[in-house]
Image 1 (tube, rainbow, N blue to C red):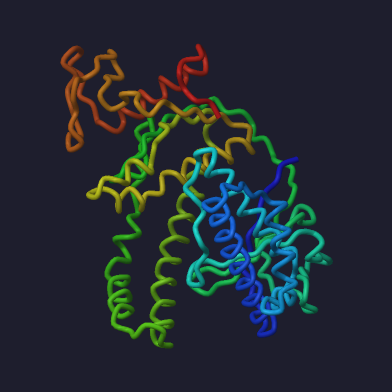
Image 2 (spheres, rainbow, N blue to C red):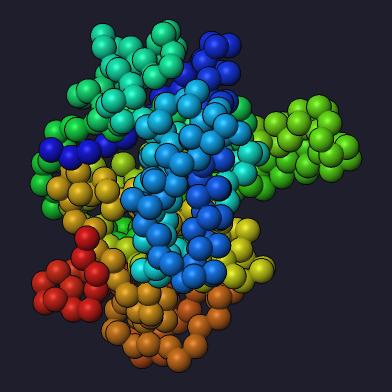
Length: 372
């Protein structure tokens, strides 16, 4: 049994909108207040505070008359916010993330509810402090009762509920097909078979519309109602771009998983690559990290093998025919001739073939590749 989150959109009533706004505000207040307190305590007395001390501080806050509003929402959502903060600190101390930052009112809002704070019966979800069920647009049936739900509101004003459920993953029939893929900017990826998938370039597609909306936003007075409306228009355009991008990546990753038993890819340090000011916007628009993440968990569910090649492997500069490696290959060179075997190579297809060869060698002989 594996766990999977199923995300659905829902349309809250006026009463639920008020309750959720209050819950989001209390979660944000508790998170920011405890974060400020933990930071100050460390700098003043070098005290290391964990979840137990933070939870005790929350209990103390709820007893203060000026913070009595914290008792009007579910206590589970407040406690889960502290657990998330503890996870953020753990990731920071282990070098996987930066220091936790304060939550903002204009950013995405979310709160998590465990079994004691919600009820799921007959396909309806009830949350604490609300007597009416959520008006969820069910696009599929849940495989089991959710263990936790996360209610979120994005910057475009849309409400979503994410249900964490157990499900039986189906192992796909074995296939004899293997593929190596090389991601890029002009083409989203190129397969070793010669297949080239174009990059939809969604940011450029909506650039004019986004520019007009951002220009209108910049002219609105700070704190005004018109500025809030203009900000919402900008957020909706960004949400449209994000939804289109994820939809395309999910379709492509599912097709690769269904058709191939082994998928070989190159591990990339996307965070380092977007430091290039000339290519940062184009690289971010490709969403390579999200694409590789989708391949990883879908391969695990379907019984496929995903092989990650070392990022320093010279896939583009090495001849897939004879193995000769060029000392230098500029980024604008899309075709090159091998000095040894005189073979003319398409840069991307040659790289995909080399990635496939290195990935299969790693599976057979245990070379320096990362296996997932």
